[in-house]
Amino acid sequence: MEESRSQAGNPNWASILGVIAIMLGVFLTGMHGNELMKQSVIQGNMPASGIMPEADCPEEELEEEGLTLAECEYLVDHVAGIALAMPDWFPSAMMILSVAGVVLAFLSIIVGGALVNFTNWSVVGAISVFSCLAVIDLLQFAVVVNTGPILRDAYLWSVLLWLILHAMMVVGAIAGRNAEMAKG
Image (cartoon, rainbow, N blue to C red; front, side):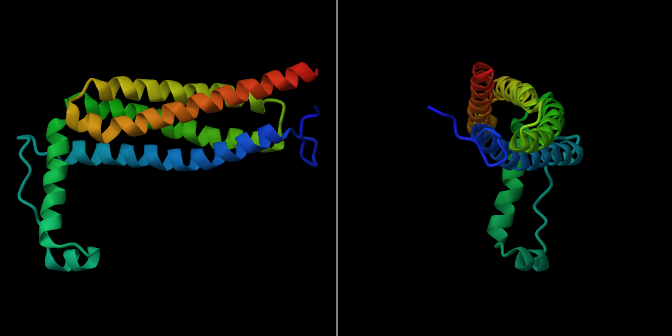
């Protein structure tokens, strides 16, 4: 059975994996960037006493955001609950992993483009970057598992989902590399 190839002679598996890597890389770059921003805001704005001030919900902002006073107060209480549930080491650990995640996610976009064009280094780059992203996921898993139930509820499903996605992408890149090597 002959493997399907694009009109440019590139294997279809590489093009498909490349498009998926680009799409997920864009999404993951934004997700890690958002986590980095969230941790820096919470860590930088938490009062030294650990007690959050009362909710400040100006009427103009409520109208602009389409929120009720009760929703605004809930959001402030929710952030305070998350901040109080965080061990001291959690924000810095997540910030370090988020910085590494942003860099690797951006690299996965580049590798995805290389897979679509099937360059010489694209498969090795894909295996390397996807494996590193899986390691970041495993480290995030270790960080989240060592927190309490509130943070596990907020983070665990997402970390496990990304771990499964990155593991599947590593397997796909290895299988594609092996198929190309078998052809000679």
